[in-house]
Image (tube, rainbow, N blue to C red):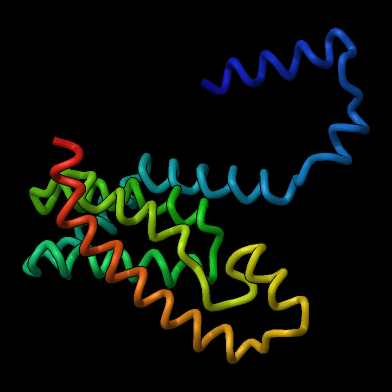
Length: 175
């Protein structure tokens, strides 16, 4: 619960166990803002009904497909979105939408949410996708066209593997 974390931070400052300058220097504020923004956007989408609208539209577009193709579509969507967005923000925004989508399609919510969560961690194509990608690209040893070529193969491979394992195993593990 956030109340516990906030109370702990308050007590650390109240008893002068930490100094603000140390906290400020050692905190990656950009990541916190990005994470908070993604969670806030997810909350706004849910409370305004926008996530339900998106979920219903998505359900209508893919609702007649077999479950495997639905999972594969969701997995591809998540993998390629995380090439351009933070994986945390992508998951925070889309997992609630996918839970609503699954419910609307009479699927257990975990059948779309779990593969989406795993897929959000698979971004291999672009240097901006993840810090490790940026580090590899920053060495100058790897050209962007090579990252895109190999990353595309990895993205497609992981999308297929995640989808197959999800359809075959998630239901058995959860139930």
